[in-house]
Length: 319
Image 1 (cartoon, rainbow, N blue to C red):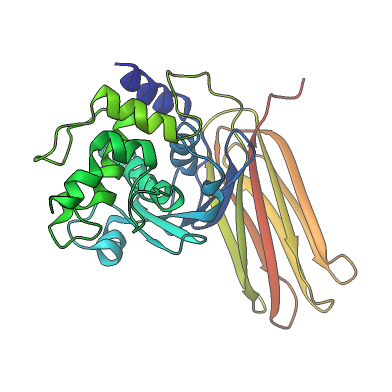
Image 2 (cartoon, rainbow, N blue to C red):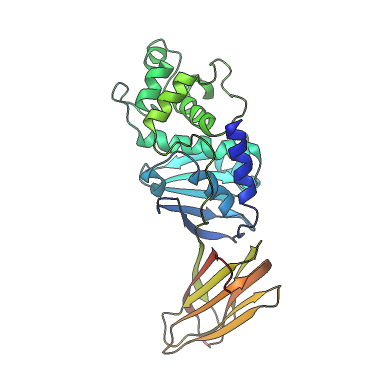
């Protein structure tokens, strides 16, 4: 029941979160560690995913991971037709791929895939080969005995449900989200197994905790603008008290462009950048709720590189 309350609390507090367009988006956990998202779909509520990870047991390894959010069609192409998500890459530059959405199934998938990342960062002296879970968990689950008996393996040669990495990921997910246990031949994690896993991890949530102020969402876009071409970043502010900071840089002194922020609540701001002013910034407070767009339109005669950054923050309204 506690985990159900936590899940409902997460969903509730995320109402009103900024919706990001495609691109690299960074935010932070409650310790200030960077969480990186590679958003490859439109109108994704990145804060929904970020809050799940903030509430998950994790440590500094979260900074060695990129969470790629894709369309369901792209997920099937990347992870396989039957996959709900997948994990890959190197230990130092790992990647989780998950689809767009906000369903209970997706909550479980995010935690399951993060479990694989934790597995890569937790060594087990008694079982040198990876994946091997974590030390106390492996002992409580009886993994060495199961391995010796040929009941489980480090790979998928005996099937998905006999992989040590998948068992660990399912048990990790069970710490955070109550859902049917997917490994039919094995009992769900007992309290002893859960306690052992908690002993191996950092910041394990024992109960729902108050949600602190949301960390800013940052969207970065880089590229080349030809004469008359426009770069566009759309986003949505689902509540009041938002602050939007739009910064653009043109490295070339011959480049010229017009920056603009336009929102459906009637607020707008514009700025010319170029020549000696190679960087411009539009900073507007007390925005939302509204759908907004920032644009960078080339007004010069030659193609030029550009770098744009949009920072979306939730702040108290200025009195």
